Length: 370
Ligand code: NDP
Ligand code: GDR
Image (cartoon, rainbow, N blue to C red; front, side, top):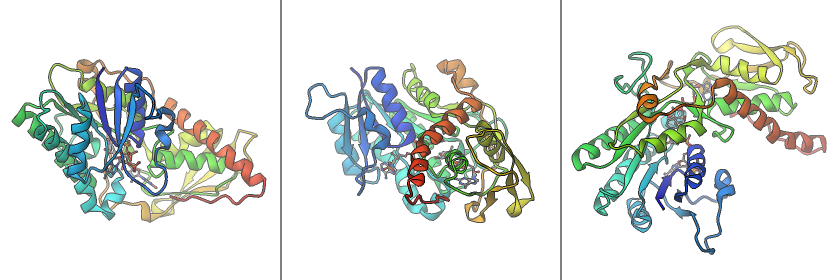
């Protein structure tokens, strides 16, 4: 039975990957951070009582900023495959905490590689690194492929650039099986609430259910190549099952503006929007509500711009070329953007129906704007 160690197991991708590997028969170990509240909501359904025999799923307390901890866990687990998904993964927040981001996202990757080397596991342990389309940053060419030059545009992307190259370097220097998955944006119903797609689907559901008035966003013109996280974790695994290690772009090849993602999300609920104004004065109003379950008046402003969500330097256009992953890994995504939006929005409606019920019962429901 193969053993996998996942850093960032409590995150979106970690949760889907853990599920995927357990289904494949792996023994799955994950590193979770200590926090004052439980932070395992995404993986609670996978929990196995560690007191039982033949436990296939185990969590270890740890942090990528702590070399001693990383070395000890890898020594204890002796994994066949390590998936390094742990990171301070929010681009905007990386401008607020640049040093921490560098420590975890850049040096954290080095700590994993060094642990494998120090422990003499180079021939046993394969390493997957969660690299990102943010590496492309300022547009050099489209679509972006494995050969496109990098031009990172945030402390997050600069830290991930180090992660990318240290993986390549350890592969070349020590013959390590180490791969970069250059993954374009991938989303799901368990996407973090402050990433733009989930912020939109949550708000659309809450606005439709009468729990929130308005959604505030930043740059609506940015374009992203969005896929479903479930499809993307399969590509991660495929990268570690090859004869030789290599780096792969994982994307859909289709790009969409944030504005269109907003339109699609409301449309899925039967709400048509019209956008008016420009720049910071742009708003979206309800043009028509075709769903009788939702009480939305024509002309109601449901979206406005808040400049606090603009980034000091923005990545305007991402569109990936997944040809290599399709040809060499045989990877094929199952979800298109429509299916992704459907999955996210109906899951959020389901989630917030509970709040609607509580509100009707007189309970106070917070208005989220993040
Ligand atoms: P999430 O933000 O959902 O999850 C990040 C995970 O990293 C969480 O488990 C988090 O723990 C953990 N983490 C954060 N800081 C540390 C630390 N100091 N030590 C150990 N673990 C830490 O990200 P995603 O699941 O969306 O992304 C997974 C990886 O893929 C990340 O590295 C991200 O940068 C990268 N990526 C993501 C893409 C996407 O579109 N989703 C695209 C390309 C790359 P906690 O739950 O405690 O916060
Ligand atoms: P990104 O994702 O920065 O691409 O990084 P995010 O969803 O945060 O932003 C996408 C685009 O939307 C614009 N935007 C807003 N973004 C947020 N978060 N909140 C807003 O209110 C808002 N309004 C407009 C942004 O300016 C941006 O252009 C994600 C992360 O998962 C990274 O870890 C990963 O590496 C990349 O995807 C690929």
